[in-house]
Length: 509
Image 1 (cartoon, rainbow, N blue to C red):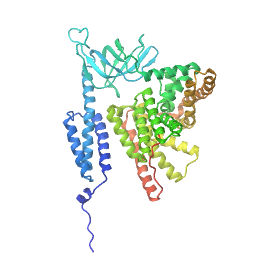
Image 2 (cartoon, helix red, strand yellow):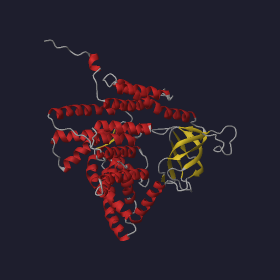
Image 3 (tube, helix red, strand yellow):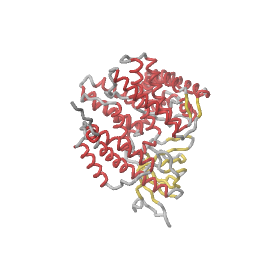
Image 4 (cartoon, helix red, strand yellow):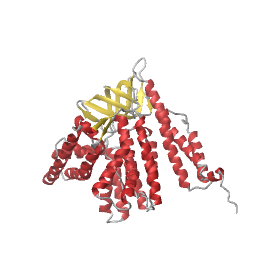
């Protein structure tokens, strides 16, 4: 009897499930956006490229083979480059204007940060007018503004008039160089006009109204830290305490993320799920939408909202996601919404911790404890260790420091973080009952003051904070042994037939 060895061509023509083409497209989009931003590629600027991409993907989907995965991946590359090209063109336009005095019109995309007489703004939906020989009295009505893609970082003296998120403002100033996610910068411009809808940003006002209620019962800096925990409101934190958080490696605790949404959606499902399963899911969706509108569409918040929404929707129909597919899908969606998210430190840390929680931490638990649940302290140590391994190279690359104190900080602060958030919320929610609000505020103050003292105490232990060269890509070589560990660990788990984890998406951190 003769046995024929299958040829390479026959292997490449093997039929696959259609989902493989879908995820090849997703990874093509991610790769296209990353490569286009890194190497400034901008060739797929015409909408006809989208037709080409759609044709390639549909062909690959219809004839779903290993070979045609390359076509789906190529389609993703085209879509990714098409999405990035307007951003790169906007950067070029603004770079060409560097040093020029312009009239800038745009929307405040995030809560203004006012501190020490200075206000920091992020401006998007940009329209720019470059005065020539003579200044036109009203360039807006004369349609002399040019639309430009991108976001500008603005630092200006705090104006007498209040500024709010979503306001449309007009500035006159000199365009400066961009950095990070910002296409350009503008320092000390003159504020010409503020345009606001009749009611303004209702959700931003609700956020400030609630913060004022909390401040009535909890004094600073405890109130500022509590609001940072609850709503990601970091503007009230002092520079000294922000530096202490950064030194200890605990900056992530004041970033609104999936932990906040997990608490909200869990509460909604328990309360309204008693009525019906549909009511529980619907109320959880409304909680997600409301909280995101209040906090704003920051990169970490966008990622968390997508994960939580997928969690609720997929869980409702009784399906599950594997961690890697979930990571790739959410990454592609967030980058399509805003490609420059890839350059945002918050986005990078959010996905790094997400990767650690979904892949590294479960693998460590399976290898060390099999299918059993580890003790509480061991579980906290493993989670902190997994998160630190994945996040540390990113922090070192950006800041040039590494803190061994992050393990201790995570072990002490993270278990009490939900209680601090709950107490701050109850303080504001019960403000109409001063005695009740005062009771919650007192307990919250004790806990928040302890957190402040503990972070400041850890930051004094300079010997545990290591200074390393920043900006060196060599630091990312540490991911190679991590990748080898994941591959070998996964193979060991499969050989020992320990069931691997699938994500029935509970909202994560």
